Each structure stands twice: as C-alpha cells, then as structure tokens.
Image (cartoon, rainbow over all chains, first blue to last red; front, top):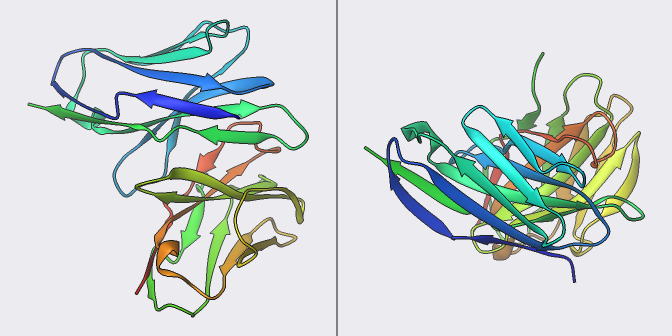
Length: 113
Length: 113
C-alpha cells in the first residue's frame, strides 16, 4: 500500500535554531518527492521537488534530502524564523497509469521567540 | 501573473444541501486538481481534470463530482452534504498533468451544520 509517514507530528523550536523534519515513504513506482509549506488558513506552497536521481535540493534556508534506497527524505530548516511556523507536508508522486500523489499528514512547526 | 483563485473562501451549509465550489487556474495552465483537507486525514486527492476531461479520481463517494470548462476553470460539487464533509477544499493548477509542479489556491472552507 502506498503510504507517506512524517515525523514528528509537531515540533516547537526557538527562533534561530535549526531543525529537521522526516518523511518515510512506501510508494512504488516512485516518480518524485515534494515538500510543501502551508501557513495556517492558506494553500500549500511548493518548497522543493526531487526526482529519483537527486540527493539534495535547496531553497533558501530550506534543504531537502532524498535517499531513494531507504525511501527516506528530510527537510532541514536553518536559522529558523518566526515566519517558518507552518505545517510542512511531504508528498510523493507515483508514476502509474494516471499520476497519483500520496500525501503525508504533515509536521506542524512552531517557532517561538 | 495571477495565482489560483478559489471562490467562495468560506461557506456554511446544512446537512442535505449541496454546494458548488469554483477554481480559476493560473493563466495557461490546463490541469486542475481538487483536494480535501481535514485535521484528521490531512490532504486527500479528489480528482484531476485536464482539457475538460477527468484524468484521475480519488477514493471519494459519488456525491463528489467536478467538471472543467473550455477556459480551464473548474467546479466541484458536493451533493447531500454530511457533517463529515466539513473541510478545507483546495484546488491546484499545473501546466501539465499533476506529475508536474502544483500551484495551490487559498481554499474554500466549508462548514456543514
């Protein structure tokens, strides 16, 4: 069964600190993995998209890694800011007849001053 | 370039009623996909339309339906509303099918009383 699991479910960190969010998936056949940021009451915004051959991709202070062998991805946030408080959603695309997107339930990050 | 526009942003209905939500994609995008987001289940895929044809469908009952017009605008309809239909309904557009980058709207928050 295609599944995407994220951990932790929620996280609280101090402003300026780094943090890492995890995403494990069992999706086959794999096409790509995406990370989205969703502010409260807003639609998700794409942070990164990685294909099978990409190990690392950065978007400003956000760096995503992908290990296709272990089917794990992480999103590292450097020098966190209050505006990083949001839900971070991992989404895996399965390349099959009709592309299927499998969503994780997200990690809620709270950055406090 | 205008983003994805969803209307209405908020609405309240009672059980048994029906509702129609609208989505205008980014200009030039031909794919529109719909998602239901609830606190317990996270984001769940409803259906995807490309060039007025439904290309993919999630695991939702037949009360959920949609369509796409020749200008790529899309509507989704939920009939015989149930309390469990209360959710944020998100629309996303992409240039091609959903294997590509998705751009989400702000969503329509439906409350069923």
